[in-house]
Image (cartoon, rainbow, N blue to C red; front, side, top):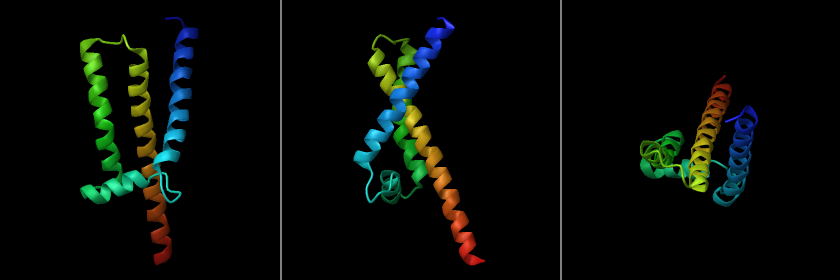
Length: 112
């Protein structure tokens, strides 16, 4: 693989990943809250939003691991989707972490 092709493949992965995340999040979020599904899932499961997100991501990690273990990369579209979904769950975990810290900071400011 050339450097140019490597960068092209990364651009494809990144561009579609972020575009898909923004589009799907508008469909799944409620009450102008992009983290709604994870917060709601956390209430149902008794965990945290980040733990719920991690649980959702493990399905995709398992599927990707299976492809890697079989060395099965013949379906480029499926491979791209799995990688993008994992990247997007990592993005959600980051956003959840930032949100948790901001909420904690707001609570601390109220106490002072």
